[in-house]
Structure formats: C-alpha cells, structure tokens
Length: 331
Image 1 (cartoon, rainbow, N blue to C red):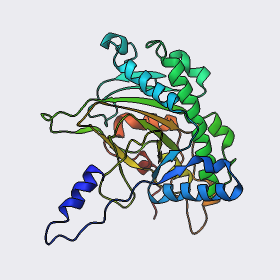
Image 2 (cartoon, rainbow, N blue to C red):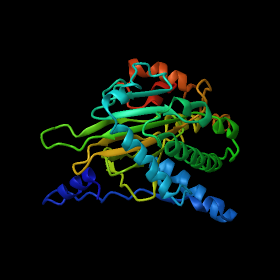
Image 3 (tube, rainbow, N blue to C red):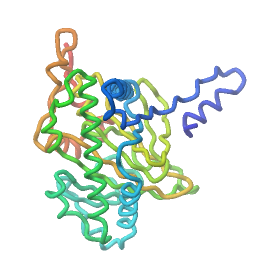
Image 4 (cartoon, rainbow, N blue to C red):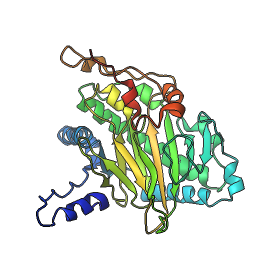
C-alpha cells in the first residue's frame, strides 16, 4: 500500500473515523496488444486512453525494451553521478537552453534535494556529440535506451491519438522528429536528521508524454480530483508513463497533465531517468480543431517548447502546472 495513502487508510480505521477506501493500483498496460489483431489493439487503445483520462498515468509492460538496455541506462546514470565533482561540473550551466546541463541545486524552482543531468536525445545524431564521454559506455548505453524509449513514445502517442478520434497518423512526422528531453536524477537516501523528505516538489511536465524508469520507489503522483499522494512502485521491467501539459492542450482538456513529485527513499539512494517527448523546439501545440466545437470551446492558447523555456525562470513558483498559464479565460 502506498506510504501516504496507506497511512491515511490506517488512520481512518480508528474508532469514530469513517474508513477510507484503499488506494486503487495503477493501471498496467500490456503494450504488446497494440501489435496483435485489430480487436486486441482496440482494447489496448481503450485502456490507454481510459488510464490517461481517469488517472493521468499508467505502467507499461511488454514494451520491447530489454532488461539489459534498461539496466544499462541506470548503470550509466549511476556511474556518471559517481564521477568527481570536477568532471561533472564541466556540464554545469545557468543557461537552461544549453544542450546539456548538470546541477545539484534548484535553478528551476522545483528541485529540493537532487543532482541532475539533462540533455536532448532526438534525433540522436544531432545531440549525442554533446553528451559525456565519461563513463566510457555512457553514450552507447544511454543512446540505446533513448532510441528505444522514443520508439515506445511513438507507439503510445499513436494509440492515444487514435483513442481521441484523431487517427494514429495524426502529427506522426512532427512527433517522429520532435524533442526528446532526457533528465537523469540522482536522489540521496533520506536522513533521519533531515525533516524535509521531498526530493522534487510537485509539478507537471511540459510535453505530450513522460516515460520514467526508476531504480527504486520514490515517485508519487496525485490523480485527478484527488488530494492525496499515491506511491508508484518500481515494477521490474515496467516503465511509468504520465500525461504532460501539451497533451492536455492538444486534447482540449479531455486529458489532464499529471502532478507528481519525488520523495527521498529511506532505504537507499535513487536514480530515475525521465524521457519527455514533444514537438520540435519552435513548433506550437494547439487544441486539435477536431476536438473544438460549440459545445467544447477552445480552452488553451498555443505554445511551444521555447515558450515554456521563456516562462520557466520567472514563473515556476507560481504554477504547479505550466498548462495553467495557457488557459483561456471564459467571459
């Protein structure tokens, strides 16, 4: 049972307190069903869109990324963070537009207790030259994982767009050549002496989808219409997927971006690798015209990844979700 929700559940068992229902497990999607017969694909598409609409996230299994590839990415990330401070500081920068950036403290208003390395990954040939050469296998292992994760993102987006009634090939070329932003996070083991157990404050991600690999539990999510945190288990071989701000815009509010945070693990340090997928830097995302009519008016202004970067430095403390700044006020 998730730690936060679980503690509330146990507290509710005291005399005189109405019992709370136990937290629902996260949906687990077998991605292999998308490539089976049409009936199996239709059911998988339905399940994915339902999970996006009701929960904002889900786990995927049978996604085609090998355990060795996933473990290799986690190993490469761990080995990078074990490098000397001097080595890692070669990638330090205050400029959030740099193609690669390392830091150990908050520059974006949401980091609490972590070090991170962020870089772009798609198209791989355009960006890998900026990546670390140490550890020696970093480019090979992280490159393989990035390519595989991008493939999974395309499968998921095709299914989601089909489920929204836009068709699986909607935006296909733009998604294929779009931004893939990879964030490697290193969280220390929580200390009994430290009161604050938050590694990363509550926020949503800007893109269409975020695909997350974690070495151990620490990710918590807040589902729609909910006010409690649910812990996301680290299921061996599974990937966590959640909805980003631009998918909320594209769907004209049918799907909502997920607020999530990272808490420090009391048993061990933790590595997570978040792969965020969207359109190219300057390509604006708008509400799909097919999802706008007199009964469903346009709810959001268009924006690009560059707009998000412009917004970030001055505004991140004002909004948990970037998409809130894009809402069109109704008369």
